Length: 414
Image 1: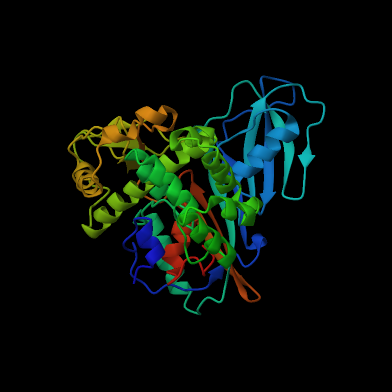
Image 2 (image 1 turned 45 degrees about the vertical axis):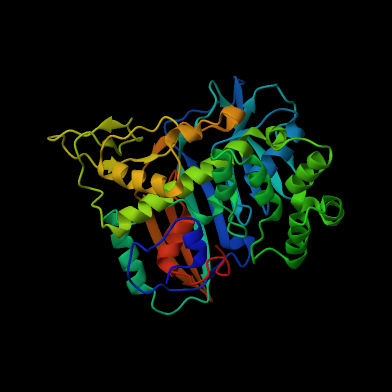
């Protein structure tokens, strides 16, 4: 049975058929450790240059909030390469323009900024090779050897699919893509209504009560009951009480957050399309003429159209992420994408949001296969200890989902 949370984010099947080992992750923050890995050819200097790079080590706080607080600390704008979950111990690279700060290291109870080096140019997402994970699983069943053999074989044969993970949408309240859908459809008032009122069973009782008050339009009462964890909702209500329009309110959100909602909807459509491909048992290694591919070498190559006769130097397929620049190439993926878009009642042009152009997304391509290596495990007392590396864009929770097959991902720590 597919958990309801999976269905809500567009995942309707598993890639493997063996019985999962069950269990729970993230009983403590130390049970889920993530460290970014940069490509080996990057060079850093101790001599001052155009940009300063820091290692951001955090616990119990999400990347956006850590970046916001860290930027205030250094009195400059910090940029990051990848989002990292709040429910983990994480290490990631961030950078800022060199303002010749005297103090290089900063810290508080939730995170530290440790100076790493200087670079001549800003870091790009393409500089991020991937992430190394250390994960502990508790309360698993005893049948682990067979499960690990099958997961390793599926990784080797590239049969695990690269779904966007729970954190892309919000595992406690999977709503980001729903807000993004309304933005794409120009229903900005409904998008704000979802942000304020949409409730999910795993939120605490007090928060659910506040959302119920919001749904009745009693914003002043709801505002009195809110705490700092609902900072975005507090800001929205204050703006609404002052008579601001929904579009004007969205413009006060951080730019990354505005785009994040639309990108989450984009991710949902990708998951739906990939689920369709899985159900139809598409062969991802059977390339068609004109289909975009790339090769896995020292770094990923630039995408290029496949032609019959090209030698397969570890070629990888690319599947479109729908955006305003999406154009059908009449490949096996485009047929599925058309089906999903018709079902959703959208067109590619809808992703250019005239009223909120900065939140528009052009579309992109994504490897539909989960790429990982060095998957190892050992037992330590009552916990199963995992370590593995995943290339940029692959989610550890999607690998763990296949291994554990939780009946309730949220209660299992996802």
